Amino acid sequence: MSTTTKPALTGPAPAKAAPARTWRGLRGSRTFNFWLFVSPFLAGLIIFIYVPIGWSVYLSFFDARFTVTPSNFIGFDNYTYMLTDPKFVHSLGTFTVFAAFIVPTTWAVSLGLALLVNRLRFMRAFFRSVFFLPTACSYVAASLIWKMSLFSGVRFGLMNTVLGWFGIDDIAWLASPDPPWYWLVIVSARLWLQSGFYMILFLAALQNIPAELYEAAAIDGARPGWQTFRHITLPQLRATSTAVVLLLLVAAYQAFDEFYNLLDKTTWGRPPLVELYYTALGTEQDYGAGSAGAVILTALIVVVTLFQGRIMGFGRGEESK
Amino acid sequence: MTTKRRGGVMGNTGLCIATGVAAFLFLVPFYVLLRNALSTDARITGEHWEFFPTHLQWGNIGELFDDPSVPFARSLLNSLVVAVSMTAGILLVCSLAGYALARIPYRHANKIFYVVLGTLMVPTSVTFVPSFVLVSSLGWVDSYRGLIIPGLFSGFTCFLFRQYFLGFPKELEEAARVDGLGYWGAYWRVVVPNSLNFFAAIATITFINGWNAFLWPLVIGQDPNSWTVQVALSSYITNQTVVFHQIFMAAAISILPLLFVFLFLQRWLVQGIAQTGIKG
Image (cartoon, rainbow over the protein chains, first blue to last red):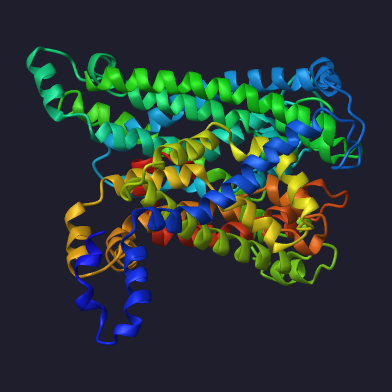
């Protein structure tokens, strides 16, 4: 250790030299410092993330109704129960439909807003703020506005009022799964909430596209508008687009707030987390089946994330080419 | 129609109309929120749509806080405590770990980093059942501990700090080393003061997420006195008796603190999102 070569700095009293040297040694020690910095985080990570997941795997092999310290080992019964439970399987279908609606629409709207804001010559900051503002709103508050006013099924809801001006009858937006108007409510709410956020990502990417590309294209006779968008802007945004699509997918997988609040107590239109909430924390309190469900959902997302890692790596490779 | 400069002005008019229409649509929900919060129920449910209340009902605020069925004032306090402590805790714990992983050479650092990366694959909301099992056996249901502590160990935030510190200028730390500071001293006296922009960005995003969180507070808050404001709002939505002006006032008040955050901290927020791509 280099610190031992300069003991003169440790002070005049020789009796204190030994503890002072250990302190200096510790202070300069990489191992000691590494653990000093990392251990609070690492301990928390293990206790609050790894232990629960492990415990959950354990619980998933037991009959654990109303208890978290079960004794009745039942093997894979919880898994077969969840995987053959029509409600749980249906929730995965609900997620698929939701993702099919929300991912392309958010991608298109946020890219469109970014293109608009990027081309503005005045009041750019104002319009950026307007589109970004809903990000401050919680999903619960948005659900409240959507359910109680915008898409309220009664006559004085805003949408029904507007339809009324055109002589169209009231629509019960959220009351029944057939016709599935509830998708319009759910998708528009999330679209409003998250588009501004992804717009910021696209704006940052748009501003990174070198202006020379457009100048060169103009010299080559490309017409500004669709041609430059198709052949310069879109290819330059490929990495961001890929990232946005994957972020949107993972976010849709975790959808809970708006489904829970908009479709209160309905048995249809439940995505996986809502279904799991009712299984584990509803009247059943079935922690065994709930844990099995959590393990299944975790396994699914891990597969998707690993796949995503490959795509992201792939996207980056393309970009740096 | 003004078409003095060919193409350009036409394009600009279209651009302005499109931007205006989009902005109008984005503002409609805020308009409805404000209108309903300051109306009476008779006006909200009236025969014709009233564009804005002629008599603003500021008394709705008092009525909301006086209603004993939902402890709304308490829920605001809970949200504030939770969001502030989560922000402070996450910044402290995750930045220290991120710094060590980026800058303190240690033989097993890679293995530790993989332990962190492993948690990135699983969004925490997916594992809410296991977390609830753990927290309830610790006896932390209905408590600030239960609301705050399990959320502090964000692998993603740690990862972001690591990426940031990898790009932190080495010269500054070396200067601190020459001045006789150890890792700990250099971190607090040199690294943190020179990273305030990044800390502010992460803090803003963490605060917004803490204030708007719903699933975990819903799971933990079984007693109304431990509800956060989002859980309280949700209870209004699912209530049998509906007092429109009251629940819209509640929603408006719940959004207000974040509007302030937006007005004053938007620069850091935008910068943080553009740098990191974290969900706001």
